[in-house]
Amino acid sequence: MSTITNYEKEVVNQAQVRRATVEFINIVNDLWYDKSIELVLFRNPLVDKRASEVLNLIDYAKEFVAKPISINDALEIAKAIQSIDLPPSKLDIGKLAYEYHLQDDSADKVAFVKNQLKDATQAEGIQPKDVVLYGFGRIGRLLARELMTKMGKGSQLRLRAVVTRGEINEAVLEKRASLLSIDSVHGDFLGTVQVDVDNNALIINGTTVYMISAGKPEDIDYTEYGINDALIIDNTGAFRDDKALARHLVPKGASKVLLTAPGAGVPNIVHGVNHVENNPDKVDVFSAASCTTNAITPVLKVLEDNFGIKKGHLETIHAYTNDQNLVDNMHKKYRRGRAAALNMVITETGAGKAVAKALPALEGKLTSSAIRVPVPNGSLAILNLQLNSNTTVEAVNAIMKQYALEGDLVEQIQYSLSNELVSSDIVGTTAPSIFDSKATIADGDTIVIYVWYDNEYGYSHQVMRLAKHIAKVRRYTYY
Image (cartoon, rainbow, N blue to C red):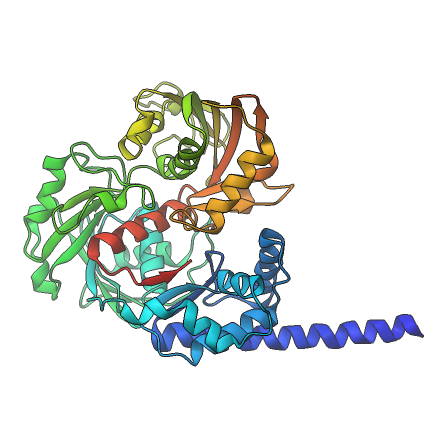
């Protein structure tokens, strides 16, 4: 009888938990669409999430901070945020719940939240920025998805146009719309995409995005499309140095350029590490470096700042990319000509040298190479490092967890607690670096670190963060 009674209590409790989760999700979405206030849970997005996804994130939070954070905690703090007059912002409700538990749990939650967010009322207003995607490949389409999903009330980045080569007709528009809507790796776009043939445009979530055909950047007048002072995000890979990228500034309506690849003669930025060193009021052309550089640099910064790095080797186990052949065929690189989905392929990477552009202290200290492997997305960087002092697994993990929980790199480093982490698990992660705490090795002054990264999605979010910095539309954030 007591077993049945306990079971009935569990059923009732589960129903209450689900009801609270649904109420929480409604508040999260209302705050986003009504006030441009985005709630996240230890950097994990919450907008448009299902109840099961939110509850899984709550379980992760409990283990991550070792505090009894519940859905009811999140719900009550979300209600407190809803009751306060705040500007557009991005708030980590996990951090707020964690901090609430660090003090007297009986304190009034509204008063607590008001005190923690008191600086928000002093945040400066921001002006929306027009964005043009130059190219519409893997990164371009992911950026389009995220720009439209995160548009909210349009107070930050506004995707206005996409530039591609070749004729634009109904068939081309239909194909572009299909590729945006359906993705074999990242799944369906959680929005709507229609074709507007008369205006050569896609209607994404009810908003017009012009499709512009151009053989070269100088051929375009963006003002003809009502686009002004735009940030051009070049994801073609065709323009890689300062002179070539400056061509994007020639057309009317363009004012800033961001390259989604390593660039020569322009600042190579890993957001969170060196973005504040380059003032967008003084610099017009930026590079977001590479996906691998964005994955390893935040982790290397933590290790350099706390232990010091003598030397090391970086090996990236990287998903195959579009420049490889589907079947064996001619290629300018010998091994990359072999069938990508059938072979592990040794190739080169400039990530070891590229790190020094963001962390000059590591100049000449790192060697690097890469192996392309038969997965379409999801990569792994293995860092074999000699430090300036002896350390332990526990010490390395503790310092990495601290940086993942607070400070300037909380958006960049996700600390994994999983015993079973594999590449498919990290697909869709917004952080560029997923630190595998269970895989750390330490032997005196030598350590081996494993850093996973979604080389498409995580990198795209780093591009978005840098774009907001360049466009000066970064909201008030509380992490």
